[in-house]
Amino acid sequence: METLKNFLLEISGQTAYITINRPAKLNALNRETLVELADLLKTLETDTQVRGVIFTGAGEKAFVAGADIAEFKGLSVAEAEELASWGHREVMDKIYHFPKPIIAAINGFALGGGLELAMACHLRIASEQAKMGLPEVSLGLIPGYGGTQRLPQLVGRGKALEMILTGDMLDAQHALRCGLVNEVVPAADLISTCEQLLAKMYAKSSTAIASAIAVVNEGLRNPAEGPAAEIKAFGKAFETKDFEEGVSAFLEKRKPNF
Image (cartoon, rainbow, N blue to C red; front, side):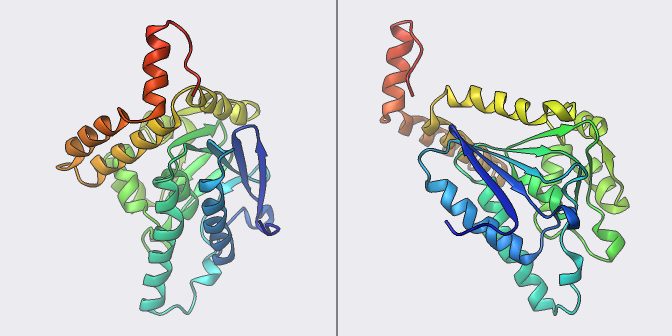
């Protein structure tokens, strides 16, 4: 692919490491960065070597400290709606529905669009100094990249409204207690913790993992249809090679070779 301007990409083994590389701007998400990320996701989705992704931010201060607010000035209502719609469709939803596990390694500030990016990922691991929040109301705005929808799913309606309406930041331990992140670790252990989680997943069926992600998301999107989606996906698994290998390995008392 073309040379990346706003990201560092390293593929090692089965893992793609994506580092948002705008440290002078605290890795803020401008339009150019989001367009580049959308293209990067398309490439990684079809890369058969890659089975998982770790997102992090360059530098020691920020994962992503928000959107690039300077780009908001002067937008019309229609332009603002299109900006949010495009960001949902081409970036945040693509991450949320990505068929390979994506872990956000939150190494510092994850604010506004940065927290929305982290919430779109499947798992979130935070360093001890990380801070998270949705401060948009202090700009006369609300979250526009899925924050009002995904935060309540993770922390509940009451806590989500507290965070959104006050704009307050949470420290890492507070975020852990309310379910916003999966784990908090020392900064030195952040990437290795993500790698250990992915290693466990790589020992499992990639087709089953992709199916599980899709069915969990469908149940959250449409609870009434969730059970039917699970039943259909469960049945479909029986025609996969991974099912044959998994059952054979179990009966033969050996590790499966997925």
